[in-house]
Amino acid sequence: MAWSPNNMACTTTWSTLFALEQSVLPFPDSALVEMQQLLFWNSAATDDLLEVKAMALALRVDAIFRLVRGASYESTASHDQAVAEMRDTLLTAEATMEQLAEINDRNYRFWQEGT
Image (cartoon, rainbow, N blue to C red; front, side):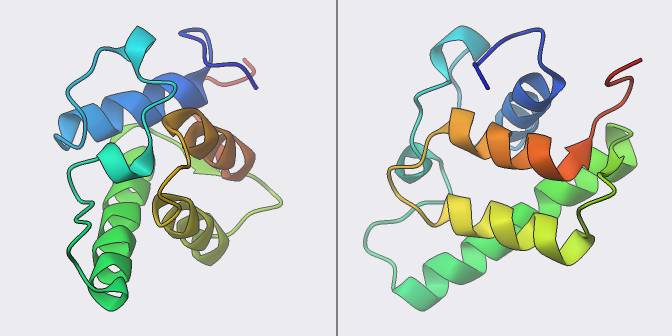
């Protein structure tokens, strides 16, 4: 999947992280933003604390996707799977926002996607 303003997974991932003040960069400059560059990341935190923060962010993003942005889970995904994969990506320091959007694209059907 290429980072594109025409892909709902890309725009919804970016806009949600932007609204949560995890990144301040505009959409075109965000594809290669790494997870360790997001606000929740603290290189001085213990692994346990970082995992708690990543899980909290994944749960918030999931809620915004579903309750605010009108997304639902793909037929092959579940809440637990979507949140766990998002958390795991958030915990991968060098993973990019584009890679996070790919995970989200696999797990969520975004509003008006494919219509």
